[in-house]
Image (cartoon, rainbow, N blue to C red; front, side, top):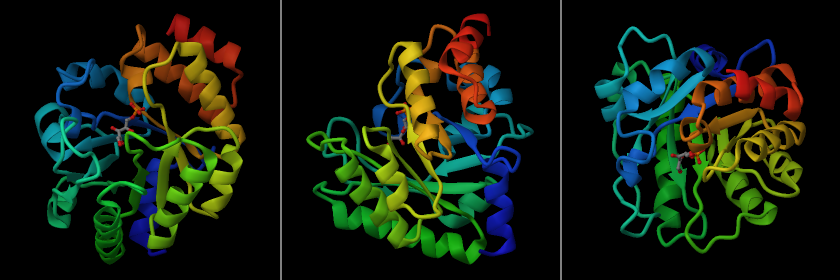
Length: 258
Ligand code: 5RP
């Protein structure tokens, strides 16, 4: 791995704990103004001090994030579909020069294994890895799940391993039973979990605990943070689990007090 790639990765995955808390706010790229992100800037600003990186599109970053923000950007560079259509029909929407202009610490796209456009989305990842390797920018592959896909360890392990084989530098997937097998399938490539649909806070904290104890490097969480009734408390609680190994009960207290 070249110096630039290692340097960018170290901005996201903290050396001290070897873990990371990414805040995902890229939902609008296919969901429009998702609950909690209509005024993205207002939602995100108080959360930034507690996030290690922000997953976001170029339009959102330019509209709602101040250029002096010190947060590493994981730039979502895929899109082209909406919730109204076939989800796997993605293209690359942002070229590498624009990612560099934004000073992205990583770039990201989704891969729809089993989806109608599986091959094309693997092609998107492959193109990003080629460009990322060229400029020292790591690529986060998101194992997106089509409407009919079962989110079990067999399927998520298959999808995650394919992303690793294509050359992804980090993989984002969902937590599931036997999650250790998914992590194992990724070898040395760091795996983070998405939060998925909003859960009661305690359940989201349990999922975070289980994921890190099964080998996840951390989370790339969105709705379970910004749709919480206490988003700042929730991200602090998630952080306490990921970076400090706090228990679910301790973290829940942090959520309530935060
Ligand atoms: C979709 C994405 C996201 O927008 C992200 O995963 C959502 O995070 P969360 O599920 O925690 O709200 O990458 O493919």
